[in-house]
Length: 134
Image (cartoon, rainbow, N blue to C red):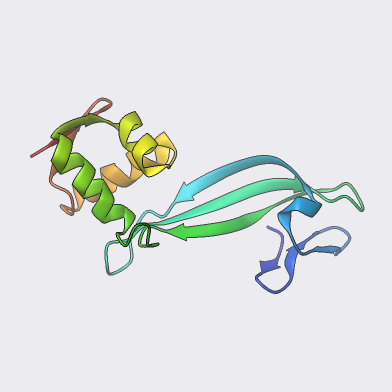
């Protein structure tokens, strides 16, 4: 994985060139990883990774672009709290509708739901693509 810190930006593993922003490089693929375990407050971390090409030497690099914690405040509520509200208010809803309301990708919501239901943080059950509040 290429080295990256907040101060230095992206660093090419081949030539060592430094880029202060993502706009300076060509990103060919992105994906996200949901942390398997939440922190002590029950918030989940979603990391965004990418493969990018160095404009100086042309080598392919792979690394983490950013991280998002589910407690990041949006309208003064965490994503976990908003997810709970959406499920309990609608009683029965699809994962796709939840993803649209939260502005997060569908498979991220699905992974988060599986974990939160398993740990008992959210009282609901998954039936295929439907989430049913208990």
